[in-house]
Amino acid sequence: MKIKFFLSGNDLAPTTISGKLFARALIDSGYDVEIVQNVNRKKQILRSQDCDVIIFQKTVFPGHYYEDVKHLKGKVYLIYIDDDFLAMKDKGHIRALRNSNLILVGNKQHADKMHLYTKTPVETITSIHDFENYPYKSFEERKNNPLIIGWQQSLADVYVDDLLSIKNALTSIHEEYNVRLRLYGWHKGKHYNKPDNRVLVKKHLPFAEFIPFLPYNRYIKAIVPQIASSDIFIVPYLNISDRYGKSGFGLKRIMMSGVPVIVSDIGIHKELIEDGCNGFIAKNEMEWYEKLKKLIDNPELRKKFSLAGKNLMVSEYNYQKCVDMFVDAIKKHITDFS
Image (cartoon, rainbow, N blue to C red; front, top):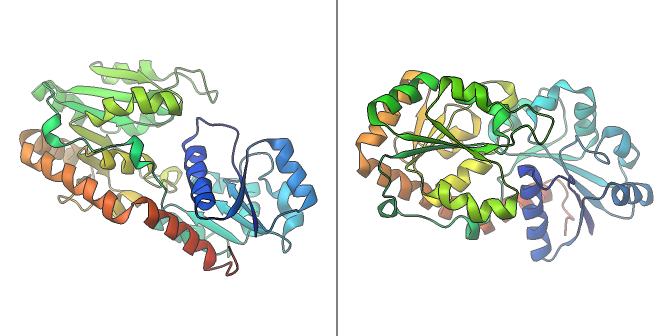
C-alpha cells in the first residue's frame, strides 16, 4: 500500500514536527511512506492518484484543501490529522473533513465535538515524542534560588490572553517569593504576520523574562536544557473553542523532562493530569495562586510530581504505544492498511 504523508513546508510549526515523527515511525515500521512538503509534488500526486492513502497534516495548506482533493473521494483513502478546532468556523475546512475517510485528533473533547460537524469517523491518537531530546532531569538537579516558573508556546504572542488570565496570581507569587518567570517562544513580529506582544505582557508582568523562539534544531540544544531546569511549569489556557484541539504536545515534553506542572481545567489536561498526583489542575485564578504557593512551599511535592509525570510518559506515552495507537486507529477503519 502506497502512503503519501502531506506536511506543510513550515518546519517551525509543532504540527509539522509531530507529523514528521508520525511519518518516520511508519517508515521505521516497514510502511511504504513518502513524506511530501513540496506543493508541486503534492499536485502531481493528486493528479496521478498514484497512491492508496494520503495522510494530511491539517486542511489549511495548498494541496490539502477540499477543492484539491474532492476528486479522490472513493479512489484514495483520505485521512486528516486535525488539531485546529478554530477552523471549524471555516466551511472549506469542514467540507474537507466531511470528504475524508477518517479524522485523527489529539484529545477526547475534540473528538466528541467533531461529531457536531461531520459523520466522518473520528479517532483519538496521541502525539509521538522524541524522548532522546527531552531527557529526565531529577528534582535534586534543580538548584535554582530563587525558583524559576516557566511558560512556553511555539508562538507565544498568540497566547498572551491565556497567560494574562492568571497575571494577578503570578504577580502575587512573585511579590511573595521573588520567583523568576521565564516565558519562551517569542517570534518578535518576525513570523506568521503576528505582532510582537511582549510590551503588553511586560506592562502586566514587569518581572517576566522573554526568551525568543528558535527553530527546532537550535531549540533542542539551547532552549530545552533551560526549560528542563525550571522548578515549576504553567500551562494556562482559556476555556474557548480555539483551544479544544490541543493535544498536549508541549505539556508531555515538559513532563518527560520531569518539571512539575500546573495546568488549566480543559480538554487534554484532564486526560494527562490527575490533580494532586502528577500535577495540579487550576480551575480559576485563586486556585492558580494557591497551587503555585503549595508547590513552592513544598519541595517534596515538587519531587513527587516530577517523578509521577515522568513515569506516566514512560509507561503510557512511550514511543511504541503512541505508534501502535496511531496505526490501530487507522486500521480500525482501513483494514488493509499495511
